[in-house]
Image (cartoon, rainbow, N blue to C red; front, side, top):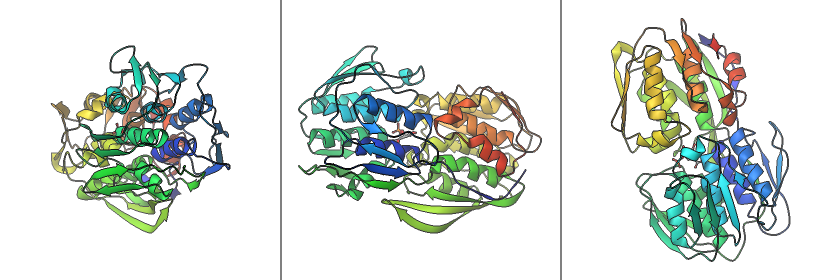
Length: 429
Ligand code: S3P
């Protein structure tokens, strides 16, 4: 496989959700406008549920400027279906915690298996009424109310938990203080600060004090998604020859653990044209094919900065030279993503001839030079489909994916882009 050319990843999924949710809460007249917003299924889920709550949002289409006209949120006529999107469900619960009406949330089969108490417990502590139907998962109903301030230490390093509390504080007009075990992505904090809200971070304690002044309508150019870019960067690093320019990538340090680990494995990625876009650092990434990758150990503290990149990093680790082992420490959270990524990454690597194993909460992968051959079960998880598609693009590879449609969740043009940058991908399924 050779790579060449220039490619742009789609808009950042996390920032796109936040742009819609925060602009939906804007006060006063005027319209918020976004360019570069991801037109993927997950962000469409957020747009759909916000429309059900009375917000006017123009059509999400690749390349379109998206306009949001905030209205006072109103009680939805039917249940709010969050599709496959954990971010939609958990951040929306935060928004609804400060609203005086009842709403029922549900999602697809994958989302209905994912834990919600990590968010509902602190929101209850703030004063929201939440009724579970099936324990720690969707569907559930929420009735917001008069909230009280809270100081909360979250047991999981989760940007979704942190963001739900910040959004509850914003809609309920109460102060919150949040501590997390390791620092997770900070897009909500950055957006609040960018909009002039009183959010402070000192020694990893986040304090937010909403003021009577409402969020103004705002404009934002959404950076490209570092997690989507990771698949392109990986394809270039694994290529036999060539270099690839991946343009307009968000390089927020809470998201770039993938690049740090990849460089530790021996690949070279240059960050060019570093700039700021709406409070987020953005760069163009120049990636050259790596002569040889080495194994590494990824620590628990690094995991939140690359939590969505473990599948593609595991694929890279499977190509480490000299049979070197890579270990990802404390990746138990991967069990509760869109699929059980911890077990499925290991099982799928084994299915294509790689030694890989989940031991407790750690993931071990041993490098091999044998071309990957076998059938991969993506479990309709977009990041598994993309990670194994990159593996399937290696010379001599015969990787059959159980499906490819799931990439529409976060990167609808993924297969077209992978083909375009010059891989010799052969995918079936
Ligand atoms: C996200 C946070 C992460 C990540 C997810 C998006 C966000 O989840 O895995 O894809 O936008 O806040 P956790 O908060 O559960 O770690």
